[in-house]
Length: 60
Image (tube, rainbow, N blue to C red; front, top):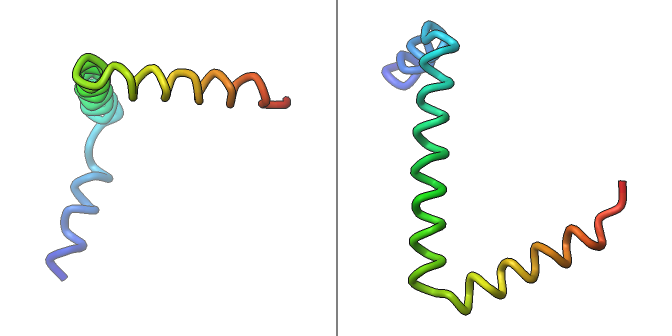
């Protein structure tokens, strides 16, 4: 029963709080990606190339 209590807290949280938490998460995620790119430039370049290929072959 203790597991259901946090769900009620999430329902009560305001839209603004959720957006702030999401913005903070996305900032940290971008920082982590930038750090990974600096530490592993070859792997980052390969990932960029794969993403470009994915976008080229994507059909609407």
